[in-house]
Amino acid sequence: MRYAVIMAGGAGTRLWPLSRKERPKQLLHLFDGASLLRRSFERLRAVLPAEQIHVIANGRYADAVRAELPEMPADNFIAEPCARDTANAVGLAAHLLAARDPEGTMGVFTADHVIEPVDRFAETVRRGFETAEKHDDALVTFGIRPRVPHTGYGYIRRGAQVEDGVFEVAAFVEKPDSATADRYVSSGEYDWNSGMFVWRLETVLAQFRRHQQSIDEGLGQVASDFADPDKADAVRERFARLPKISVDFAIMEKADRVLTVEMTCRWLDVGSWSSLPEIIAPDRDDNTRAAPNVQILDSGGNIVVSESDHLIALLGVEDLIIAHADDATVICHRSQAQRIKELVERVRATAGERYM
Image (tube, rainbow, N blue to C red):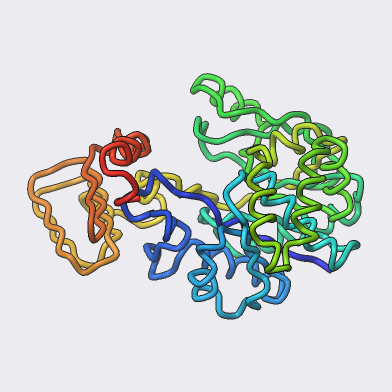
């Protein structure tokens, strides 16, 4: 059987003060009243029934996730004991699904992207499942055809073509500088690394055993006790001792064989407030309004964000980000959007966890 697992554990620090520990960015209702998690789930519903879609995230989000996704069976929420990066999230989900269906195929998808159109996404995902099942010695990833030489994404260098739209992966490369990104895109040999994958469960677990034996053994122990409430503390302690490492570093860059399926969708990582104008069309003065109650006079190039009916009024200002929450507001120049994470650390140092 085919399964999808949505990773929904990201903190979204650069979307503070709306994105918080108790309600991270994938649960915010900023996009036509829908959350990014809801959008991810609906995209996958075009491929699989709700019963075959799972979400893995910190257990504190269980009630919020179930409220967002009432069609998904409650048991399909996998409560990650604590945050230990993507390799441990992926590995835990793989162990749990393999215990139920060792012959199954598992897709891993993100909860913090905008991907359009849905029909093309669904067609490509189905192609990914077919590829993983046909080439059962390979891990499969999705490469996004790059629109611009972006320096904020990792890249995949395509190797030999296996079939139409499917390639061997020659290399994974980290976020490049501007000149290198230009060269990658100009060459036509590179795709953006989407962070989405498909693989046979037995194949990915074999790669964990080969390349991350201690992690795999720890995850196996966690999975075996996962459903026993009497062992919850032991499970949490064991999971917390696992090294934090991404799935790319842990297995993808070391795997015996990796294939990439090219995805020709509009794909956007909602990583900071400055990405909103690519999702929400700006007005004629280039102001982006992701808030229900905004008045703007003689101002342009601003990004205004709020979930509440609190009035935000702008007069004679340019190129600002204004992000309002009930107890905190950020105002910064658009050029400083990536430094919000730095600002959050300053706030934590002076006010503790109050605004986190």
